[in-house]
Image (cartoon, rainbow, N blue to C red; front, side):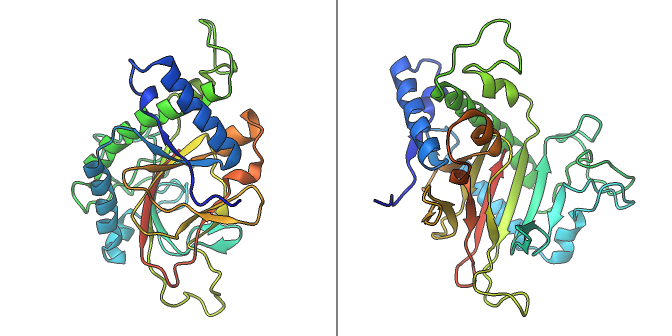
Length: 307
């Protein structure tokens, strides 16, 4: 029988130091089942207020509603050029991102953990001068909305706490041995993902999917996607979406059926990344394929993820 929804998992037992071993065991059992069956699940009990999540969505929506000239003030440029880009950070316009050889019909802002020699993310200022190696430039923060930067810096800190709880639970879900005092990043025990993602090179994407009333190109078809099918690199993605139904889709284990991952209020959609699938579990690599469906007849969708 085809499932009609992703499982919902409460992560609060891994955020509460007083939680019982049985409560944590119930969580890890659920995560193990979700990762093997779907590669995805809804995450609740994360402790981030709904008001904060709504504000994060609204600020992104406000940015994407700005004129293109304003958004292009933080345009992404290739690394090593005089425009000051690093090939990764900044704003991408519609169709600039490519998945599976096809243009994605969305726009996005990419933020990464600051490189050691770049401007500090909390106190630095945007600049478009000089040259940078790939990924080694400063984050390019929008000037508008004015509260976006501070709100997102606080949000990223919260997400890192939630992410640490999730990867700790994922490690315990694999029934790996407990950590020892001499464990390092090469040791495979229940804390392996915590160590491997400590000070991780996270990425935060603000993505806007405008409604596409007409194709952008003459040869475009109704199968054109706002983001083509793909898996995510790294260990785990935490995704926050607006209420739009029927947009994010997850490929089921039969390799042909797509399940709508419609937003659950106050919950994240979590998907396991290539690092987890390929190296630490027996799940079919196909399990974490997902896509954002054609928006030729659908309303707008905005979501953010961190890896």
